[in-house]
Image (cartoon, rainbow, N blue to C red; front, side):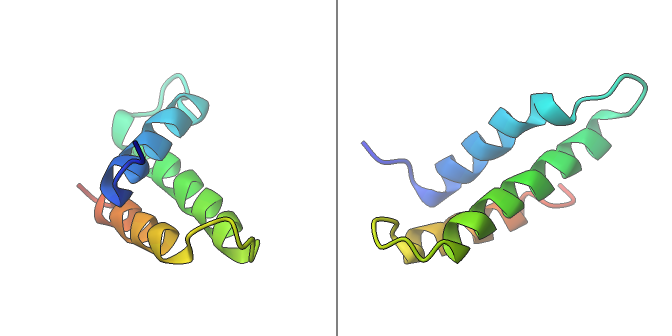
Length: 71
């Protein structure tokens, strides 16, 4: 079953978070970096113009990722 855009946004952020983790930095900074990485990933998908991707779905994922900013 396909994730909802909100579920997909959360999954992308959670998968990218470990790559932003740095010793000595706080959780909020790392989490914000993971959000930015997720946005870049979705932008790459949207910019690919690949017909197999549902553009509307990925626009909604991007909006959901943006909703995690500054939480």
